[in-house]
Length: 98
Image 1 (cartoon, rainbow, N blue to C red):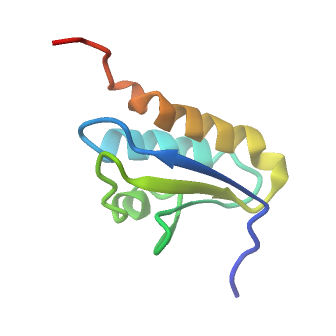
Image 2 (image 1 turned 180 degrees about the horizontal axis):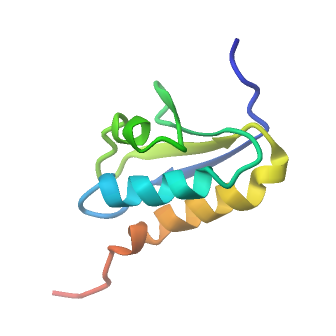
């Protein structure tokens, strides 16, 4: 049985390294604080955002569009925190000009 999604936010992977182990671990840590399940989806595959291994299976490169999905609207803050982490380039993006 497919779980009902109550909340979804679209985000883009903006850092040059794409999704790798360090940000996957941070996302999983945030997702584990949710009341209900949080998912990441690339439109084809949906994975448990509380699982580092599941997140890494998305193979999300720079420019990948992902959806952060929650089963409960009570987890809106968790979704927003994960989105902000993506928007910040996982803390790895610099604005250096050449």
